[in-house]
Image (cartoon, rainbow, N blue to C red):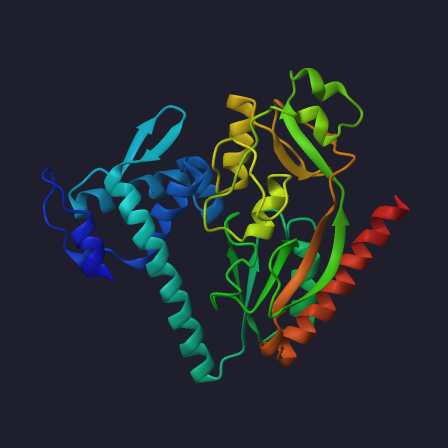
Length: 316
């Protein structure tokens, strides 16, 4: 795999890549910056400050002998070499996750890897973590955040044991348990004429550009977020991979976005309830053939925590 990275990054303006300089931490940093398109947001995602992250990426560029990112006051975009590295780095990091999981299993260590989408564990995250630690203080927990291209958050690829995610998606071979059902809203610029409406219907948004997920994404999942039907014609609009890219498409280009109606939005954006859009079901998911005791216990704890949170919300 590293040889393939070396080959793909060679250009007439670069020197040959020496593969030993590319450690997994540097690749993980670069992937975060490439996905967030911004050093500040990537640093927040990685739970670090921006200066060491910037230095690490510049060191990676120096080691590889090529520019990986175009920098501007508003953010960054990958160069052709950066785009090639991004594809290969994601594959390497996923392979490393598989290796780690196999080694932990062989060693008999008690570990649980939880996959999440960007917003799926935020509201009950602290309560869920505390409840699980009380029940299983010796278990090492790892959390893997996925982008919008994989609704199983790595479950099908064997990267996680259990996922906190959203339906609908192709759930063949996967068991799901409902945690919460969220009404959906359409995300618009705050100065959009429709933003002052109390509710909207899909017909009110006819002719608007609508964000799309990349080719190869689960067709059921992709159709839901495009407000179409699986196998049908998609609404035209920019292709996005992350929640942030979706929100930026709305802010800069007036693209129609979707989000749970109660989801907090950045300044300049507004959410209007979408009356004829099916709700988004927040679910716990795991492989049906791999429901060990630890996964079953996590499912029980998560269900209890989310139900308690819903009761508390209803009482306020």
